[in-house]
Image 1 (cartoon, rainbow, N blue to C red):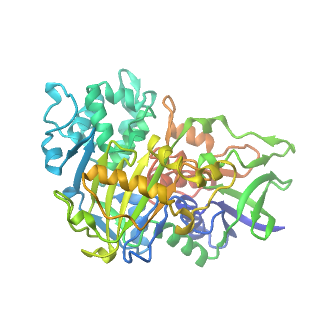
Image 2 (tube, rainbow, N blue to C red):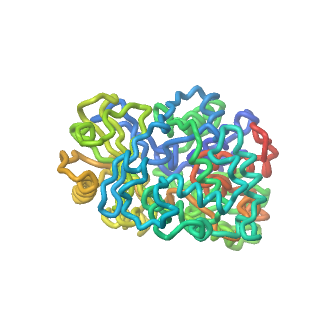
Image 3 (cartoon, rainbow, N blue to C red):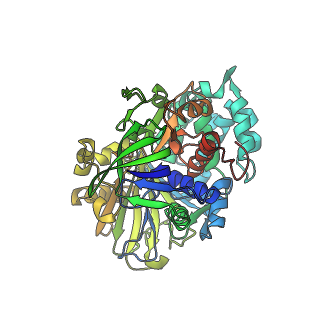
Length: 512
């Protein structure tokens, strides 16, 4: 039987980081990285379509910010090139309740199709949200917006904060914030931000922290795509001696009499078994119940009920390719898109938001691409219902997203999304040539990002879940179990905590 010291299961950014840290600290340890798909990256997936050269499509996570200190430190240490986004001059338009709003309309908070009371009229979407959040949490003011060196202080404040005499974590975000604005103002904020799950009834502590990590700057993309981060981490680990095994899907874990774990793996060449002294599961919560675990007694072990405290938020991305950058010619449009541009158009349509991505080599003509739908919640279900691959995945035949050809959208889906984009802009547009739809809610991922239920102290629950089976050397870590869910920074943060608790590897940047 094959034998290693440490098996890292999952080559997303959390697993890549775990392998990198272990091999950096202990170069003599035998480390295997098992990944079910054919690529490294997990929910970080960057591709360049040959028809639109020089432009990276981000089908998963895409941005990070200065307060994300673990990401920033790794990007610099690995020599990855980052592009600062001009978010202070971002283009922002909207199509809300059938009304087309220009950037000037939104900046002046005029012509809004919402019946706001007098004390809310004239306030921008951002001001309405900030006023409500600070009314619920007055002590948050020094951290809003979040500065580069203040994330740890903000976490400490939020963990001690109380609302109506109860800990912040005992509240749901939606009821908490909606208590400080009218129903119409809440609807406007929800519609204009285009990510309804972020204004959901999830844990108020975690969602407030998520928003702080969003409303900060400067903000960056990796020039060659965010997937370059886990790829570089795995490359460093492999060069230090780790063994990367793509196409290796873990199906079961058994306790062995010597205290190690036997990992049963399906590969294209058949079933294999690997023995590991320590197993790091860098997997989303939805993937765990399918793993059969047998303990020292020879009986099946049950995954902890605490996993039910984790919420999985559906999310999707739907890119459309066009023969020309038509947005340069529409009235009040964003103009030419450059690498540093951030130009977004939100809508009360199933597409949720449209981001003008760029023409080939970020020029002013030629084949171009639009992130035609960047949605979550019900919008993801709307688009997923039109893709046969969604049903196939739910019936036990997941499509591992490791090439664009596997996520090419059917013609009827393209036509439906293109129609909504035309509705949003109020004009006929050139037809798209093709499109790519990635639904992160379907198996094997089960969610685009995660949240915690109210009444859960996420740090305490994550610590309880970190070692799910007392008599097994199996440990959990990653974005799903973090305080800061929905961000790569959160995945790295939780993995640091797991490596410290399980192996005594102190976090490289200090803190917890």
